[in-house]
Image (cartoon, rainbow, N blue to C red; front, side, top):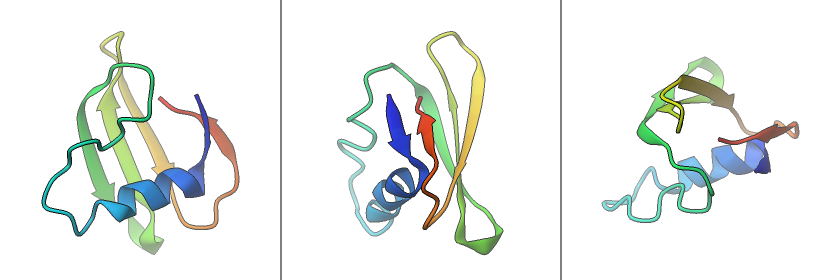
Length: 72
């Protein structure tokens, strides 16, 4: 699925103050597991996860980044 980096960033940030992560990344259509969110310098976030083929994937996102990426 195509998504802009800034939209993914905003989605992750919206869960920062919530107590429940129910529905987190529920909009994606591929199974992923072991999702970790890592804060990076400059306010960026790295999403690290294992995809459906057991490969470790990483994607870095930040505010104002308009590039469209395939996620997951």
